[in-house]
Length: 428
Image (tube, rainbow, N blue to C red; front, side, top):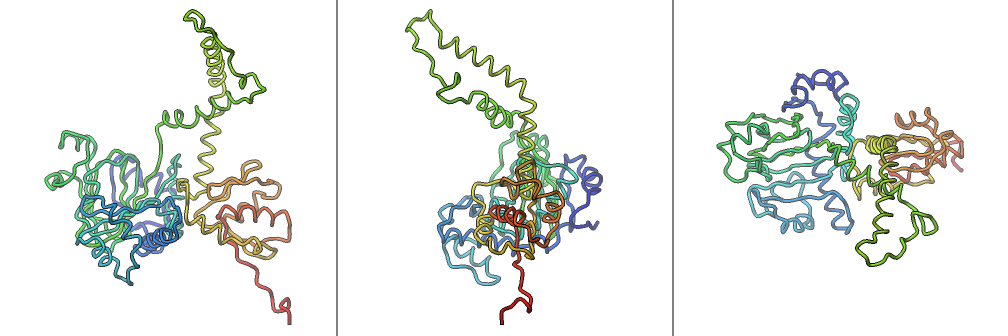
């Protein structure tokens, strides 16, 4: 069955849940990803960007790992990153020579931060998923698997998030899956299985991935990939979190800290008095217990508003970053910021939000590529925001608009094409 690109809303609301038993079982969607959106060369270009950053001594969040069989070879990583580049079409032989092995596996995390083309191409898929299915609180990342490995380096293992595995070839990938219940019944454990597991394959569901295919992998499904020829795949895990973890790690600490903030001249900031060393005298404990009770009571009253504010902030951050998770050092963003020239922001210039990112304005704050900048909503009007997102649009001779665009450019989320002077304006 052929699919439109990107998939439409009916795909996510009707076909997708029907094919996946309401998003609980794996299903292989054939020929869904066009070559223009993602391909092996784009993945290797991302790896080349990591190598350039390594040569420049730049700190980045994207990182590569090298495996020979199931052995993670960190001793080979520095060699692979520093060696002279491979000739055109010679990546496989280049890796085999450096690894000293016929079969190898290269795994790259946060590929979206070193490959603008993949961030944009697969960001199109992600945007359609958000529109039709919903937004994962933590966004998504791209994890590349390139090699001719006879089995995934992680063995037969469990996936903890819903994910899509997209395949680009040139070879095919054989993929096997087991439900959590089936796997534990067969192996007697929920631990990963390494080494000799061929006996297990006949009990799994077998999928054959060809270039352009996308396999949906629900959370808690065990799986392993095998291939005889070199090929490239990219997984797209969707990061959602347990409610308790979000409250424990983010919402409640933020709320409690705000309620207990106070400088030395405030009641909350004033140190406790000295207390006698007497087991029957507990003034410090009494003061702390009273303050704790008051704080928790106030926190309970404000919890709903705090949760809503936190989740909206996460939602806006993820959407403005094109759906990708926020990382500490995004190489592509850093390079876009460095390339941005405020002098190009002038009347008549063409400007657009860079795909797949999105400009959002909430009150006096604008979000783009995951960053917040102050703004005047009377300047960044809904019509202007819509035009920039649809882009490109021509900048007017309005100093306030030009200043706002220059501020947004510092996020790395804008593409500006300088206006070319007409023959009449060109000095003789």
